[in-house]
Image (cartoon, rainbow, N blue to C red; front, side):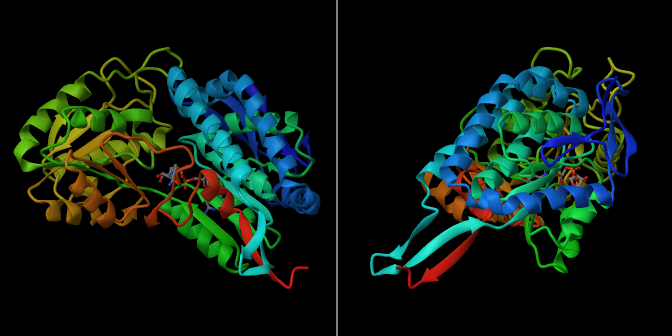
Length: 477
Ligand code: NAD
C-alpha cells in the first residue's frame, strides 16, 4: 500500500507536525489503497507562514515570468498525466479511461486557457485616454487558501492554482481527504516546474481541522473554495471575522429543459450527461423537464439509454461508469432513491441496491424516475449520484418557473430548435451558465453560480481576476 505522509511546505516535503493517519479507500474494491496524514493547526500555520514569506517576491516577479512557470507546469502536467489519472481512479473511482481523457484533460484545458488569457490581459493600464495619469493596476490579493472537493480533482485544483499563480498570489492547497493522492502528484509537478519555495504549499487535512484553521487564519487574505453549500456557508462565517475575500463554487440542481422541437438526440444526451462521472458533478443536468407533447416518448428513450449504461471498476478500461466515492455517499444516494419511490415517483430504470454483478464496491445502478413533481425530495436536493428526475411541463412559462424553483443556480440547459425561444430562456433562467442544444462551453468561458451555488467565476481571465485586487492610482507621472 502507498504511504505518503508528508506535506509540501516551503519547497520541501516535510513530516507533519500533528499527524493523524488516514486510510484512502478505493471505492471500486472497498480496500485501502494508501495511507496519508491529516495535519492539524500547526501544519496549516507552517504552510501559511511559508506562503506569506514568499508573497512579496512572487508579487514582484514580472507577470511574463509567472506565466512562464505555468507554461512549464503544463508541460510537466502532460508528461505525468498517467500518474494523475491512476491516482484519481484509485481514490475517487473515475474509470481509468475517463480519468485520462476527461479528468486529466480538464486540467490541461484550464492551464492552457489561463496562459492564453493572461498574455492578452493588461495587468497595468491607463484608466482611459481622457485620464492618462490615472492608472489601473491589478495586483495579487495575497495569500490564498485553496480548498477543493474530490469529484473533479484536477479540474478544481488547476482552476485555482493556475489562476492564483499567474495573479501573483501565494497559496496553501488543502485538497479533499477523499482524493489526496492526485493532489500530491500535482505538488510534485509544481516543484518540478520551478516555482519559488513557498509560492505553492500543500497540507492534507479535514474540514474541521486544517480547513477550519486556514479559513479563519489572520494571515490568509482569500479563500477559494469548491465544495458543498453546507461547507461554503460554514467557511463564509469563519472567514467573516478577518473579512477575507471568499470565493465559493458550490452545489447545483441543474434543469435540462427539453422542448417538443428539440433535436432527436436531446434526451439521450441529457441522460448520458447526467450519468457521466457517476452523477458526481455540480453542473449535472439532474432535473430533465420535458414538454408534454413528447414526454412519453422521452421517458421511453431515457429508460432505454439508462439500460445500456454499464457499471464497472475504475481500474478496468472501457466507457462504463465507476462507483461513487465512498460509503457515506452510497448510503445517502440509496436513501434518496428510496425516498423517490416512497414519495410516488415512477421508477423507470435502476433502483435501490448494488447492481447485480457486484457484492462489494460503492456501485449504484443508473437510476431514472419519471413523473417527478417539484415538491419531491429528489427534485429539490442535490443527490450527487447517477439519479435523474424527469418532470413534465406544458408551456414555456411553466418550464421557466419550474427550472428556477430551486435554491441553486449553477447551470441550466435548454434544448430547442427555436432560436428566439432559446435566447428568451437564456435571459430568464437564474444560473451562472446556460448551455443550449448540447454545445459545450468555449475556452475561457467563466464557470460559476448564482444563489446557493456560489459567488465567484473560474476559468480564463474571469478566474485570474478573482485572485486580483484592482488598484486605482491617480497622478501617475
Ligand atoms: P465538501 O464540502 O464536503 O468538501 C469540500 C472540501 O471542503 C474538502 O476539502 C473538505 O475537507 C473541505 N471542508 C469541508 N468542510 C469544511 C469546513 N467547515 N471548513 C473548511 N473546509 C471544509 O464537498 P465534497 O463532498 O468534497 O464535494 C461535493 C460538493 O462539491 C457537491 O455539493 C458539489 O456540487 C460541490 N462542487 C461544486 C463545484 C462548483 O464548481 N460549483 C464543483 C465540484 C463540486
